[in-house]
Length: 247
Image (cartoon, rainbow, N blue to C red; front, top):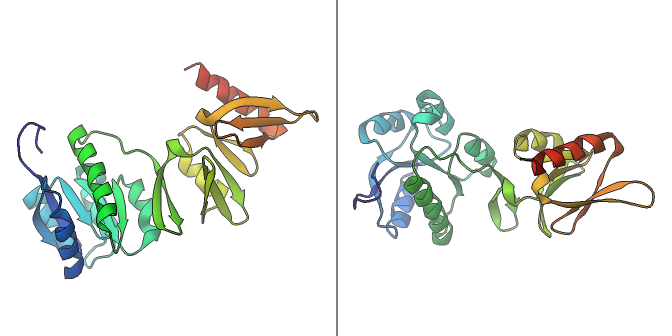
């Protein structure tokens, strides 16, 4: 690790069983002179050996490799002893588990130069901030433009949509192939509260509570969205709001 004052480069290990994929990461890194590739690994066993031998600051880690996949490597070494991780794979379904083990980013092949540059910005910010920084909680969403990662602090509310969940970020929404109950367990502890059977709200987004002529309560969000609050959950929701304002 460097201290931010010396001209040393960040040391990179590329772990992928495909030579073309390793070469692709090298080519993309060529545009970022603060990063230097110090080694390549083709399987899980080689990765574990290279981590000890080379002490990289960053690892671009393919999910599916022989002799132990990415999660096997992390489990054997422990997440605390891993360098900054960027997952690189053709399989978007592994993105959420990747962030569960504190990956900084998740790149789905093929990777464009602009998308890679975004990853490098995130890496640089994390590395310059020190390894002790806590990863920002995020959700991975699949859109028509590919995989998109959204910080939880940008999400206003989440509603059930048949067998899916719809995630609202301002006026935009994204469908996620998870139930509301599954998402509730993921965002627990990050300011989200269930307001009725089909909706979660992030408390920071609540602008006001309104009572309708029928006596129902509606939460008005900063985005302008109006989300009903069920009678059964009303007291707990109001208490959560008061708790937030008293902090």
